[in-house]
Length: 185
Image (tube, rainbow, N blue to C red; front, top):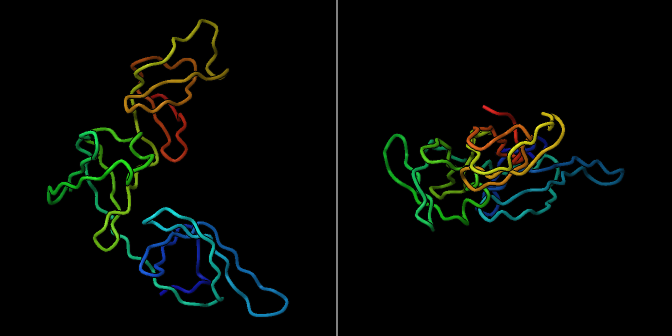
């Protein structure tokens, strides 16, 4: 059990049998009445975000999430398949379950799959992935390294803005949290 006074961003709690992640919280001490905690929480099963008010010091159960390292194998058009690195069991997840994560998945990539009570909640990607540029306009003489950007299509189909000096075939690092170019590898 966790006290609402100990809330912090990223904390996972369990309410009504569902795991929730604390996105924002604020301790409020009104001049009249007892203090309370107002929190913005995200349901990890459905993805919905709600605001909830808790009494200060109220105890809520902590959600126990299990992380398993798995390797991304392949995509058959409808499902994405991952293999447990220890037991070699395979898990198939639909594109709807993965949402935006599919743009960063590369075959044979190791990732962490998050489970709650045996049910898959989602994927925890590394903060940065290395992807190859498959299509971009050629740089023009006179373009500077810090003067602007152009669109580039990566091997996974993701389109991002890159500096002018990036060419087809270059391997670049992309931030999976923001979808932005980091550096050329």
